[in-house]
Length: 148
Image (cartoon, rainbow, N blue to C red; front, side, top):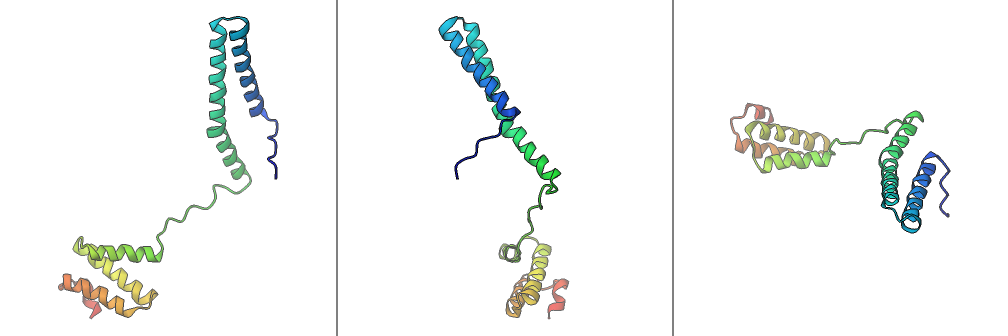
């Protein structure tokens, strides 16, 4: 499908005016007047033309898209899902147990990991292994007494 021409709007009109002024003042300054003031004016119009393109691309267009989505009822869209998956949670808890940190962190990680293996993954052997590993590290932990 061929590209569709942009509709004529205020942004295109402003861009055309600045572009025409830049080219026109450059030609007048170089060919007709040979006066540096014409070239300075061309440079000023060129800078404004560049700034206009920058504002349109990075301020006005995103603002227009956001306003359109908001007024159309789409809002900002659903928030991104940043919650870890079950597998990511298991990996995190296993890393806690591989590299011992503090007693409380190790025990809490083992308890959560045991619950996941026993209740969700239905793997009682892994659940017992996790508790056994932490119990060897902390044999007097009262939190692990219920896992006899």
